[in-house]
Length: 194
Image (tube, rainbow, N blue to C red; front, side, top):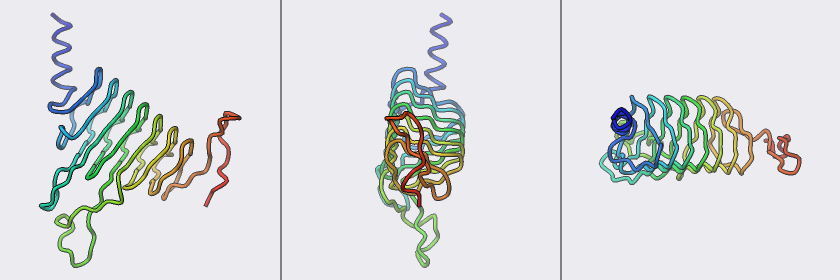
């Protein structure tokens, strides 16, 4: 009976209604979820407290079809925010430290376009994060970015463009300072440093 109650409580409080979630995945309270039916979470994924998952369906009267897809074995730290007007795709095994911001949307900022909150959202494209990436504390991943597998994003970095697999990124805007060399199994200085 006690085991049944634990399962029931976990299902009510850790698995938001309407959201597609795999086995053993949890989203801790308190949380904010916009359009849970447009969000899919894989197995063994854990999202900590005070996170916001916003899959936008409209803004300023215009329809949107934002989708958030999070794979298996993903860890999302506290106070993270994911906002999608098109789509955010997070592959298996990723780790997000606390206070990470990921969005494929930006407010319209046209002078003469009226109040900013009433202007249509804009996007440079979907966000895609490859398998086993690590996103450091307070970092931001902005519209149109694709990260390959096993990328590391340093603390408080702002990623404004795409990078290939095995890149170590730091700064604002983020730049690649090292690449992982599979042959030597070491991180080596990047030859393409700006």
